[in-house]
Length: 110
Image 1 (tube, one colour):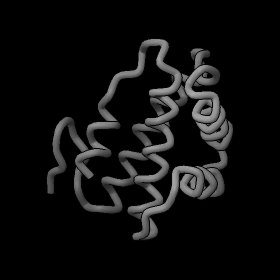
Image 2: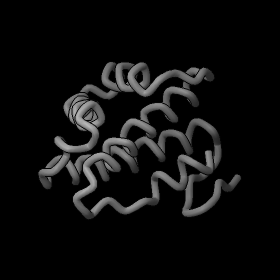
Image 3: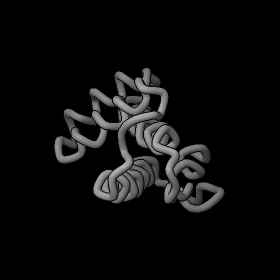
Image 4: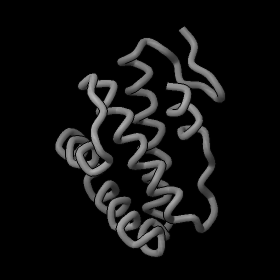
């Protein structure tokens, strides 16, 4: 989960739509892996998260759209970027609760 920790603590203020989409989809994949105990594709993880967090389905869809475009489109508006930051923290906190390890900058504790 160190990788999840690293991804969570990245800052996304700049124009890198692709990087932000990557982070959203990586967090989806990490959460699905932790909850199901099996690794799947980012697409499978996105589908799984959309079904369990419908309030963020639109954000996951934008991340997938950005990924398909090679990071050229999607996630440029302030609403999407703010929602992404909230989503990343929420998912990281859920992973921490599920694993019993706190996700903090640079390492897992517990």
